[in-house]
Each structure stands twice: as C-alpha cells, then as structure tokens.
Length: 498
Ligand code: NAD
Image (tube, rainbow, N blue to C red):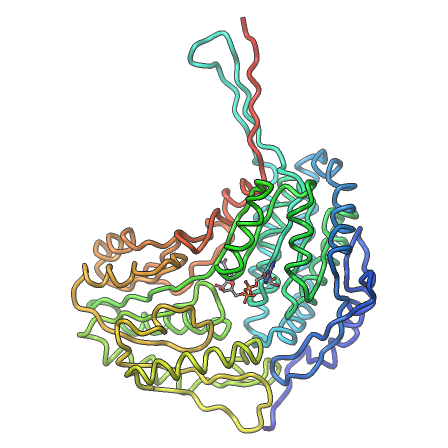
C-alpha cells in the first residue's frame, strides 16, 4: 500500500518516546525510573503489530513505592490554597494544548486512532484540566443554625486522600485527565495505572503536569503487565482511600469486591451498550451523520459507542442505505497515512472477538448490508466498518459490547416495545434518540435507563457534564461539578452556639 505520511510521523516521535521509556517508565516522585525488577514490556503499534518501544514493567513493589511518594506529598497538596491548585491545572491545560502535535502522534502510534481523532482527544483531555482548574476554587461548604437552635453547623468538603486511578486504552489521554484533574483540584495525590497497551500517553501527561508545577509525588504512574498485582497492592494499602476505575464491567465488579474489603470509596466507569433510536419522523440525513460519529468515533472502541440501531420500519431502508453508503466509502488504514478515517482495533484479541461476534450474528440470520474495503498490504489489526441488517431481536450482538466498527440495525414500530428492548440490558451508559417531535424524543429519552442520552446528537461527552452510567455501567460521575465530589469527603462541625 502506498501512503503519504502525515506529520508528526513515528520517525519524528522517536526522540519523544525515548524520553519516556524504557529507562524512565515508572514515574514516581516527579521523575521517571526503571521498574524495581528491571523488567520491561513491549508497546505495540496496532497498525503494524511492531514494537514501538519497551516500557518499564512495574510490580507490587513499585506500586507501594508510588504510594510512599503520594503519602509524602498528600498533606502539603491538600493544604495548598485552592487558587494555587487551580493555577497549576490551568498551566497544565495550556501546556497540553501546546503539545497537541506530539501527544496526538504518540496516541496515534500506540493506540492506532487516526491523527485527527487523536488531536480531538487531546483537546477534550486538556479541557478537563481547564474545567477542574475552575472547579478547584468552588468547593464551597455550608454554615447555618441547626433547626433545634443552640448549635451552628459547618459543612466542608475535604480531599478524600490518596486516590488510585485505573484507566483503559481507548482514550489514553482523556480517561487519565478526567480522573487526575478532579483529584488534584480536590487536593488528592494520585497513583495511576494506565492500560499496558497505551502507557506512553499517560507518562507524557505526567511530564506535562510536572512541568505545570505539580509538586513531586502528587502524581505517580505505574505501567505494568500485572494490573491485578499493582491494583491489589493499592487496594490493600490503608493509605489509599479512593479507587477510580474506568474499564470493563467484569473487571470493575472484581475491583469493587476488593475495595469492599477495606470499604474503599470507589467510582466506576464501566461498559456500555448504547441504543441508537431513529423515529419515523427523524431527520434521516442528520441521524446518519450522528450515527457515523456515535458508532465510529475511535473506530467504535468507545464505551459510549452506539452498539445497536433501532430504526423505525418506515425509514429503515433509507437510513440503512445512507449509513451503509457512507460506511462503505470510509478509508481504513494506519493512523499516519493521509486520508485515514478508521484505524486498526487495539490488538489481535479484539480483532478476533469482533470477527467471531459478527460471524455468530450472520449465522443467526443477520446479513452484511454494507462494508468498507480493507486496502491491500495492511499488516496490523484492522476490521472493516460494517453495517448489518435483519439482525434478530435476540441476537448476541445486540446484547454484547461490540467495541469495534460494526453497526447492527434492527427495526421497531411501537414505542412501548422499543423501550422494552432498549432497556433490556444491564449496561446503561449512553443512548441516542433521533426525532423531530421533541416532546416524544424527550419523553422517550427520560424513560431510557441510561446515564446519558443524546437527543438529536451523536456525542454526549463534555467535561462540563456529568459522565457516567446506571445499572452495571458504573457508580458515580466524572466531569461537571459532580466530578470533584468523587474525590471529597464531607465533614461537618457541630458547634455549641448557646
Ligand atoms: P479492561 O477492564 O480490560 O481494562 C481496564 C483497565 O483495568 C486497564 O488499565 C487494565 O490493565 C486494568 N485491569 C484489567 N484487569 C485487571 C485486574 N484484574 N485488576 C486490576 N486492574 C485490571 O477494559 P479495556 O479493555 O481496557 O477497556 C474497554 C472497556 O472499558 C469497555 O468495556 C468500555 O466500555 C470501558 N470503558 C468505559 C468508559 C466509561 O467511562 N464508562 C470509558 C472507556 C472505556
């Protein structure tokens, strides 16, 4: 395959990567160092399967060292004036925006997402620093008389303490900043474990924070191929008072059980199974444009990705035809090749999972209505964007998080039946509703069991809004005012006023 390579290309990023790993892969006390064991692991380019670099492979000992550093920093950071914490976060915002090219390149390299997607993610990720810089100075409490008289009550919100953060690979920058920013704003020191697929972005974010003036030990990063070992060390450590996890529901469930042993405060951002509902009166062109974003942002590897399409039977032919035509003409390829709209999926296991899930849907009666072509010569983990029609209502693919560029389309006729199908899931993270009848759209949206609903919109993520799910999609919210509360404890003083 001949391609024009965009800038920054891997060759331009090499020096940047060499500064992050392998000798400097474990970030503790404001500096990078090797893992205690000296072990490293390979970070792979999903577009080729080739090794990008080796990163230090932290273990439980490194995890404890990270908490030691956080402990040394915690009290002073909590006592730092909110305005000062705010200024540090504001500088981090500016530095991250200024480093967009390098960060986007790094993310495209280790995650595979097209450069335009990576740049958009850097902007989104940086915005959490700006948003929480603004929230850091608004953690007001309350003061007032008690109803019975004779006492005054003061209510304050204090940092919960050292927070353990665990992030996935699909948005390596934004999932990190969505946790780090509110934790720092609240006055918490953090220990972060990024996904082994994408440690470089997290390490780059840690460097940016150091440059912004975050004191040593306030942010520590432990990349590892032994997530259970590192996270268990944190959950067993009495100095760790908070767990904030983003990832799959099965792992989240396991970590919640572990957190319960020490009654650790836990926030969970877990899996999704978003329905995309199109009504008979929807603006079909707009719905297709929204569907392309809701389904294919990040190649479908998003917890908010539209996972199942419920299209009213009156418009299903038109909607599927338009969506399918757009999907069939997408350019699939490596992130750095000009024109790439869809990159590879993250690894061989993901590719196998998506392939088998679609094969089983086809065996159950679904058919491929449209599919994009895969260019010759690709060596990485690519799956062609695909639209499926005639998907049986009980098909596994409608119940399972696909996490890939596949759009299964099914139909509906009656609102009550639609809602029964839409709500027949334990994963209530995001949903999308398209209709020009706003009354119907809003009433339907309110009845969907999901934490976030896009109404005539294909994107729900915004740092200023509370991100999170219901049922087994999670506990707690990130972003918005709620985001900082996840890293605070409430204390009240009862004062004799007689
Ligand atoms: P994953 O659960 O496999 O991994 C997430 C993180 O947990 C990674 O850092 C991983 O190393 C770590 N981990 C894995 N096993 C662990 C264990 N036994 N103990 C401790 N840590 C462990 O998920 P993934 O494949 O990286 O990410 C995809 C999933 O994340 C999807 O289900 C997606 O919906 C979900 N997700 C949710 C949100 C959200 O905000 N709700 C955002 C992004 C992704």
